[in-house]
Length: 286
Image 1 (spheres, rainbow, N blue to C red):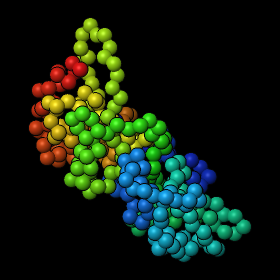
Image 2: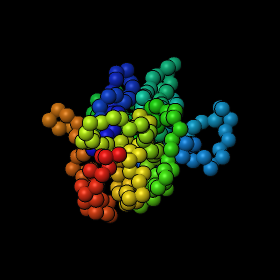
Image 3: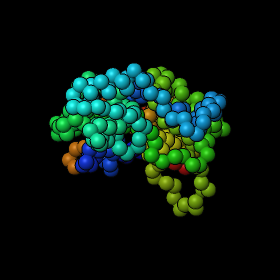
């Protein structure tokens, strides 16, 4: 009723590890060893001017060199390491003219030592067990991969009664340490169709992983909808950004036990759930 997300991991052959079509795996924070230029959609006040040749990420050179030394210690011959902000290929490598050239996503710069060691084994020796460790790490860190589809339409965050961007920042600070880098906007209002009877269901919020975008149904932009309830819906969608979905009985479980446990940590959880039960009929009538 509140939302879902899609976009996971697969491992193609020939020295590449990437993302495929499963359920998104996301974790709660960006790598401190690399920074992505802020999305200007929600940061218009930051006047960043860069030449076209400038990178879209800033990489801590010390962290890059540290991992490059790990590779050099394990690989025969010279090594050249590049850090990327790729969307599909998280790891790629090839040996040309005796030089091992590797490209790894920025998420690996501050990965645990065990993950970096597995990545070294995979790059240097093609170690299968190492590739599985790397794959699970990518699965758990999909939040560090930038959106695969740009948001082309203007985003409306300020409603008549609720300012979604203000609420998003408040929830992000209180519950996620300001680490969720998603976008938020009101859904597009449509003309009221002619109905013989009122609708029976409504999706109050949704999360698009390919856009990193949370949309909130415009029916919630009412003076009688309390701010804490809008906070709860945004919090729920932000959890889809930070909690991996799981698979069970051959299908995706969008709200695994960890999700439900974290959802219950919302400070006004019971109040919000009760308010929804008491007012869902009124929301459906619009």
